[in-house]
Image 1 (cartoon, rainbow, N blue to C red):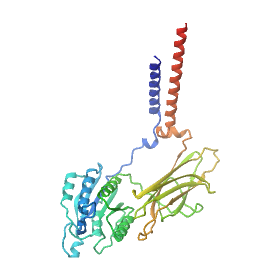
Image 2: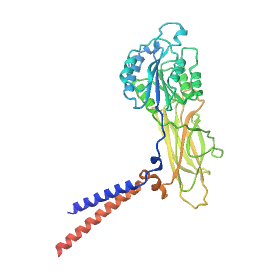
Image 3: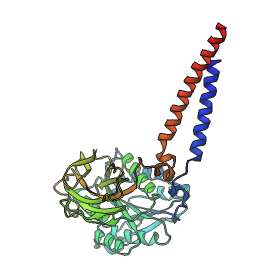
Length: 420
């Protein structure tokens, strides 16, 4: 009897909590329609030059490893992504450099993916000719033109450009066109010169460079880059941090980009009004070859140097970016209380081999958000259950207490009835 009553009370409390959750207003952002985003486009540019015959990736040739990786990648392309494949060095086996440096073609057109057709096209490839990276980049840029979605080019090669054009200059030329094309590069068992060239190509368009030594590593990295094309495109505002808070740029809510040299600290300022919460995150990307074991620090301090909050995260070479994030709620105060100037410090502990260029610095992305502090009444009214779990917890606690009281009351009544 007592157990049934307790279950009934618990069920009633659960219903009450569910009703309360349904009645809680959802956030303003959820009520607004999502902005229209065009179809993302990706083109994989594969080196099929003669050097791809080398058998130094997990006991097989570089070409075989690339083909197997492509099969896995093509099976996992997200719905709604237009994907194409371009080759370089796949068709001309001769020694005429003028002809060899034009050897690039679109193997599979950018569009809705037919996996079987794309795989069949890749299966026919055999290591053949030259390495015209520059012409292949220009061809891929043309392949990806049109539409409003993101554009990403993934270049997979095992060597430097063997033609006259400097592919790094070509990448800068593509960036100057303003078509929003990001070039990511992957070097298969690269030497130092190849790493430098591929890093420069990626850097010119805000992309990333990755050294690849194993087939599974190639598969995983290409999948990550293809999936990244579906991310909402937000263009950061360029800013430049300083070496101290006193002369640091004053930033408002938004997304910002900067560059930071190896093991550097940069400062920024944010005004936080009473009753607001500052939410900040910083990401530093290793867009070139770096030593393993590195970290990123993000901390907030007062103008007088007192630390408010900090976060530091480390990496071991398995990722191409490291992020840290902080939250700082400013208590409510009188209307005449001025905003507090908070100093944000972003530091990194990256290092690199002597052969790697340190300029320009590593890409930094800083996100700043200012929202009503969770302690304010508007927390639930404007941000819904996402920031109102305390209410659900309170309802659950109330239900438990009510259940216990009901159980003890029922037991007391039963004992009283027996006594009579």
